[in-house]
Image (tube, rainbow over all chains, first blue to last red; front, side, top):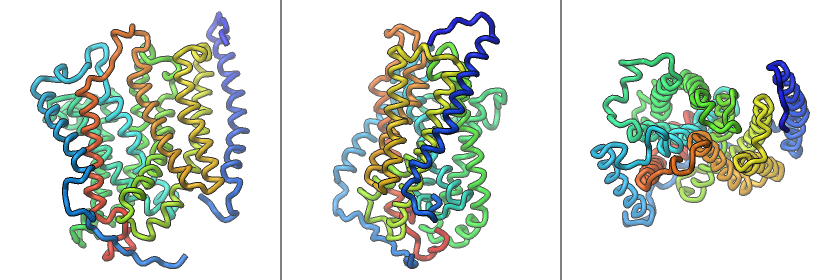
Length: 47
Length: 396
């Protein structure tokens, strides 16, 4: 994923853009993973 | 659940001779370690190690200090879970975890003497010549204070063993303050150990170097501590089962399930921030290289897979799987700390200038780990760590 950057703004726009997309993925993926982990828990268990 | 009356287990080793395989092996290692110690302090650091000006930090820092501190994180993690978050089902894990942390930090300071030399000057950075602009000073101060706090946190066990009821009562009154102070100190120096490497962007491989290193070190220390607590419980259940009372035995499964669940989620979060760190620094180009492969082995092989196995273990209520995974996760943390401090450090140097520990460095590390195991065994076979003392059943 080699990209040429001519200015710092180009670099930051590119890297932060990807980072924000990944944060969006994390916000969806992590609750799903938590649901997978706790999927078979009894309703009253809290740990 | 019905109330279980604490029943201290028998405190005999069950053997008539001191020449057990454990004692013989550990005795030989300690003997070799003593000889190397004499050599270290008579011939100097160059006489026993492969350290030089290019590679001033070696195995003693990379393993003894970095791995030691990370794996001793179980102390503050368990205290925080039990006393700050009120998860009382983890109560039985507190004393073994505090003991491990106390021994871990004690041995970190012990090992530091081999690296730094001149032990009598060890208090200088704290009392005489404070380098307040250095991250190392903060780490030194935190380790010094936290080791003191751990000694106080563990002192009720010794007081119960000695039957010093008055001292036990007094220390019990300030235990909550000690626990909070210990958690604050751990939070500070676990992240600062990562922050130390922020001054090495030209030496540490870009896949391991990141502005988020303090965050990586702090988050990984939490699941390292949890994994170590689970692993320790599995070892205790196997080799010291006669020292555990019924209540602790019952609760240890709750500890494994609870900590595995938290560790799995934290490991998933850790992977996400690792990926985001790569994106922020635009380090994607390093992934299809040999260093990238090594990085992926660490992240996928020793973080992602253990996280999934923990999750499956929790879903299936499979304690065996969780216990085996904990060893895997512990090895992953060791690999991560060695990668940052040794393997991916000075990565651009030709192979003949790279550091590899000498035989005596490796033996010193084995010697220090053995001392830890021997002291741990000595303490848990005599003091009320894995069982409640009959005179203090509610204070445990």
